Length: 250
Image 1 (cartoon, rainbow, N blue to C red):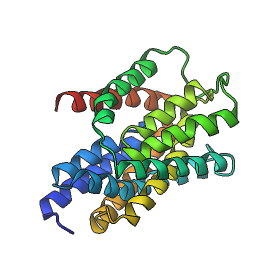
Image 2: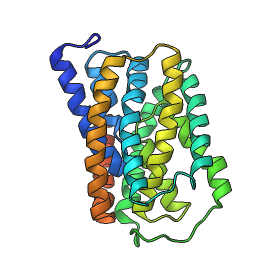
Image 3: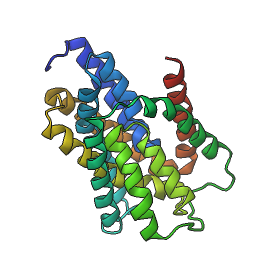
């Protein structure tokens, strides 16, 4: 499969299924798939580009599942999705020319902060709370920053969108998860187009991983809609802490 041996291909496909499951609930799937692609021997830029291709299937699958169950209206978040897309395009262009060492160093600490918030913040549930920022300000200032991060690097984007929707938009956890998937799908599209244009994607690997992502994401989204905050909140904490530990010590 492209340049990968059969055992390495099986390894990255399995990682994609796990990433799709986790990402559809709590975000952070890229912190499973990007290390897997690097272990398989891809250079960092090709790993990020191939990750964008396979991530389209997971975020798209989860978005469709949440939308079909009425947890999010694509029309409601259409403008924000376009802004997320544009931010990711700019971020991906930056990724092609700048070193990512600073992001890699800061990311574990950001993930720990998110985990602590969701672990200890009282009153988090599937019920909406008071909005702290207008929809226009959220779309114009918060969304493009996170979208640009997704295009630039990517891992943890879903967790950052989740945190923003809960703390700033006042969304309940299930609603925040559903909206996160739409914006994450849009940013995946933006990053994917840039990396594809510059030839930084292994297509066979990305498509095979994408199918596994799709299946994992459908399973994860189904469980999240059935169990709500009771599943999403603890899994988000576990994922953020586990991934921060991996980045810091391995």
